[in-house]
Image (cartoon, rainbow, N blue to C red; front, side):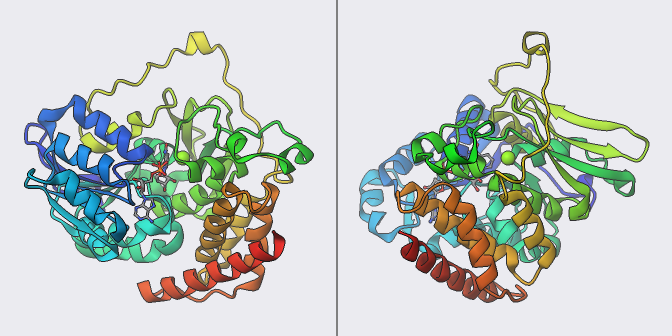
Length: 397
Ligand code: NAD
Ligand code: MG
């Protein structure tokens, strides 16, 4: 669908906006932009997993209509935090999913993991414009999300910096003349580490990303480079390009956020300092632009830009994701579930760093996928994959 076919409010009418995962890294960056541009936005719904006090404070600050905690045990604390404010409080998975369906002009999908799928589906099903950070929604159920998006006539605005970059330079009218998408990757904190050193890496070392300040799960994903694997799958759903035409290029400075190569030899890139408020501002104001406080790019100060091929020996996750996407039959659901369990187990000190990718590989071997034609199909495969992953982790620890 052409971008211009979607009705968007003009920039002089306040945009009604919800933030799913408001207390996370993406959520906070979004809140920061709204705080600086209060006249442009009205906040509708805000959600969190269980940080009730933090969520209540945000809801009060932005005078939201609704605040939802996914974890029912946090409901009392949320109600207490909102007492006397007139802001509605709700809790539990159904309330979380419903928060995505509340009428708004734009929803920021900033929940981490497959836990964000239901609310993303509710949002696109409702026909709301979705600024998507929750890449796992596409990895788990890309076909369902795209079908619901198509049915309701809305669209996804990519927030992931690479996909937002591609979105900014992808000429929809010349889609047939795109030769390649080039996803850049920082290489993470272990880019130059030997396998021996990586084997002993601690959670603190893994979450210390050199360029980006992000939540724990995506930080570990960046350290294993599974993040780039998930992004490869995300790109294959977001853009009309086959998986074999999506390359990964390591670029340690995170200045060139990704590129599109065309048949005439032109390569278009989007650049900027590594600050998520740039792609978030792009989506919040789309199709217009708005100010962001991100540091401005000073190429003369940087001097030179570096690029290198990814090392697939030390970082097998990119190839695992590529083959899961090609295999189909829900293999990406298995990949995602195994990765979520393995990352959590690594953060809990139950497995070593290199065992994250090993666990994913072994679970992919053990679990036979099936087509994901419904949310129920996804749930059963996700459940089975998590169960197998947990057992593998238990036998390893
Ligand atoms: P985060 O851990 O900082 O925040 C996650 C948010 O989701 C929090 O508000 C948390 O309360 C909520 N949440 C966690 N588990 C939940 C559950 N089970 N049910 C409901 N809510 C739950 O994560 P983040 O770094 O902000 O990442 C969010 C998403 O954005 C991820 O999919 C990530 O891959 C993607 N992303 C993040 C960045 C970044 O810079 N942080 C960049 C690109 C993409
Ligand atoms: Mg990214």
